[in-house]
Amino acid sequence: MDISIFDKTSIKIRFRYATFVVDPAERGTKVSSDAIILLNGEGNLLSKAVDYRVIINGPGEYEINGVKVLGVRVDKGFVYSLASEGFLAILGRSGEISKISVKGGSPSVHKEEFNTECQIAILNVDDEFNQSIIAALEPKVAILYGEKKESGAKVLGKANVSQIKKFTITKDKLPEEMEVVVLG
Image (cartoon, one colour):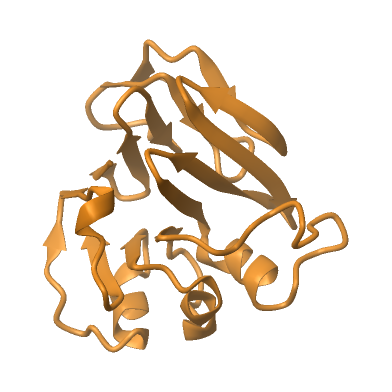
């Protein structure tokens, strides 16, 4: 699994047989993908995304080339789980994820339908970051990007984490202790 950043708030997630672009930006280079995932469900400009077949912008179950995606609505946005290649990743904005994992979620989000246990947490830190988000998810790898990614890393006790453009992980390389990765 590869996670790379190509704009301040846009990332690309690549599994062996499927590629997803999350919140494609108006500016920057064009990026090819199998599907687009919109964390807020609307308002994103798709002019820089090419070759996609599906736009995932709401609750429901999806399958793209063997990657199972489950989306749930939380307040104004969506949180997604992506399962493939032995990984379960949670993807969303930090403020939205905290409402599922910390407060038990809104009435439309039941723990039975959305599993918050994951190996990888991919968080767009666009709001105040609460360490209890990570404590509830218990990921092996926390990947932070977005406007407040540095402050999110500091909250996790990783003040001097260097920013990277791309992070690659395989199931057999998952760390024993939680690793914090900052994309930038």
